Length: 259
Image (cartoon, rainbow, N blue to C red):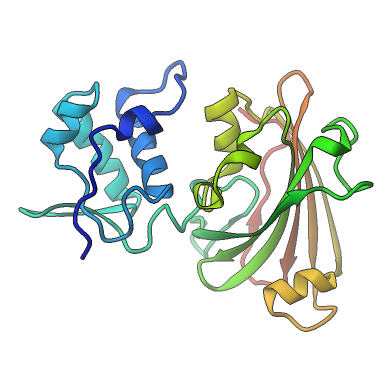
């Protein structure tokens, strides 16, 4: 098992942007999540102990303990009596936090874990499907991902964003973006929050590039879901397309107006 990595400066590197009303423990939790997602602590690695975290961050021991309990409850870390806190083998490094657009549910209505993998990041082709309001075509970036839903089936998505206004999507290493929820990246780095969604859904035969990535037979049936996410003032934040194969799992569609 890997030993603990030096982490005395991790909070300076990974602390999220200040957000009004965000509790202290949640800010520390989000910093730990970002560090794990970035690979500072790999699956199986031991985190600094509670006293070290309290000494090297702006927070009390009680705040540290609450942040670690939150991570343990979410399955991101495991806590072993007398040994310490360890990154789970199946952690935030693999699982997307609170997906908005791909919330598939089990029979009890509980959301299934989504494990994304980036397969492509490149400038969007001219004449693409993104809204004209999103970006100058020269600034539009496309990120393709394959999402394993509870290791049962896979979904293909293309995410389009203005890389000039939101450059982290182009500049961050792929490993840092790997399992991140992109709406959280927008909120944490640019205070850009989704206020309204425009959604379109239709049945179709999945495109060849999608069936190839998902390992399905040619012209497999499925659904296309197109989403335009807007900020409170109507500015388009991103556009996303999802290609969903046949599945018995229900998909909860987000409300058109976000809280």
